[in-house]
Image (cartoon, rainbow, N blue to C red; front, top):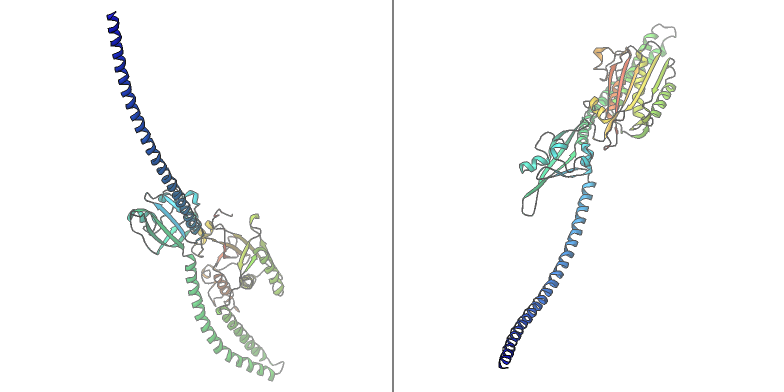
Length: 447
């Protein structure tokens, strides 16, 4: 009985000890839970603050992105609207910007350039230091340097180039930019100014000569008329007086033609359908010169079908006079029925540059309308080919040598030229070149 009581006491003691340990563990667990709850509440508050800051940061980022997008769109709008070419490269020489004006001036589509290395897609030109690639490589830009570029269509473009380094906020180089504009029109204006200055000086001289010559000519003509009046109708000396009168008339016509040649007339250009203009000019010439065109045939040969409606901007009165002079020259040179063949076509820019770059200065958006006027006459003597457009040069006994000179002047006044040669089958051949506008982006050959 006593043994059973002892066992019971020991069991009760052990239970009390376990309960005590459990109570301690439970109290410790509660402390941990309370500590975790406090930490959770603190973290929850910190999370809320971080979330609020993140929302504010995102809002600012969205605002900044919107402003940057507007700034980028504004910059792109500027680059697309200006008429100067702009090319930008990064530090590796990769083209990052290539505006439409650069595409037009260089004749290279933008999608072939962007993302490519500058050296692989853009002609470097001369001097070679005047481009964005050399700027980023050397760390130095250039300002207003004249540069010559050989374009993909085999033409040559003269531009003024400036380059600069693009830097970040810390001053480090992140790329380079190249800005250039076409100088062709400026060069044309310089040539035109020289021509006008020369013609003005020649005009003053011609006016003075005309005044000094016409006064005595009037006296000679008047005295010749008096002599003829006092002579009998059958007096053989009247033939001599008639020769004097005809000589005075010829000299007066020469002086008038000289004044017309040297006088600068304002050019009034009109947009004409060239084929219709040529047909009207030929018919009008036959009507105006009915006394000398009995055996004259003028054949107008149209160009390829796609050029059936070919338009040019010219002064119709001046260009009509040019063709009149060429037709008259063919008639006077021939001793038989005359056939004149007129062929015209607009050349592709590449063909125009290859054939006539040394004769006509073309802008990047220009080509030429080539008109060939050939006849079946005796042709031009080889030793005279270089002089046919010189004033007062003539091989005709009663010619004044100003007809072809006036034609040359009209061609030059339109920014073009006129060339003389002999045809393969004989006869003279004149080639008239008139600059005309083309689509500067589409440089595919027309013919």
